[in-house]
Image 1: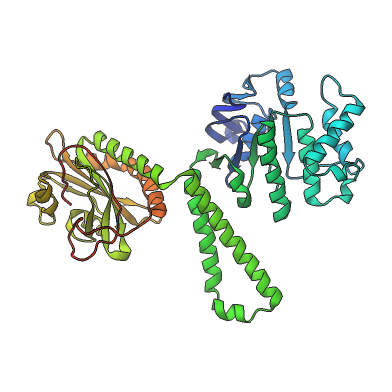
Image 2: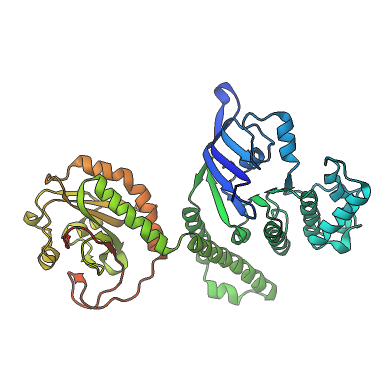
Length: 471
């Protein structure tokens, strides 16, 4: 299916000379017919700039931007006007003319159509589209006789009446209450599917994220991962609620509330937790644990190859149980190899405790090296590189361990520095896995330094080389 919107390596700037500032950096995206894409991000991140570029309201400065198959970079004024005529624009303010009825406001959008639409056809089409948005009984009402949600529906009808292939919406729910906002986006979603138009919608409203087919998340003029932002948003929501809780004893506070105060508190709590659930559910929908695992496995193999290592192991740090446990590693056996090590014990456990990289030239001669796994599997660890991985709070939450360089040489500080170039993206994937992972009990018999029942089943290992890998 050909995209209706195709953005390729677009950069944009405001100002001139010394005041020139870049506001968009290498933006690339596509939107196909029937698709709803939400553009999210903080104020000033570039959302509206992209919207106006796609709508042919700004000049494309660098890169390629094709709207409905027509290149906008270097396009003539006539081309830009023709493109705009096939786009429906919806803004935060409905911008209805108070002196005109709902039907007449909608008909204003047809005044620029070529060939010219007759008054009779304009009336007919305006009534049809108002019925489509649920306002068939309000066609002759003036804006002063309509609610906020109804006015925004008229604005949507005005954008749709000339049957556009693309709808561009800038904060269409910002001025609406919860119910009206939901009605508006549900309507847009329905119309996108029915009319096979593409919708690009700029929003700060977390209540409507679930309508998106995809989310274009922007920060400082760059496209960033929505999943990471979603987890951060969920964290902010719960942190804010925790601070409210800490202001006083919650049970005592609730007991002292009157009926209205209690209802208001429930509404507040419901809003916060609903936002949390929606954000987490959407993150789960976009990137499930299995997808993360596949990416993590592929990335682990690639890092191992780039550093010329025979194999690699990734451990999660489980501070609650005082252990590190394998998440990804490479070995030849069909069954996942599971390893648990106390924090502070062995080389990997010590790295988890200290946050310091370890380069070991002769593993078996090192006092912290545990030979148990090598002896059990028949693998011989000679040299290893063990590196901490830090989360967003700058805490060690994972450890990477690379075993045996293929050329027989020991690992070097240069290898450790090279690994650091991969550690940040690996940390993002690992942290996402950590949040999404389930932690069921595992049977007895995994490789472990401690007696008793193992705590988790958490290893996805890849066949390669002889089995083993000392810790």
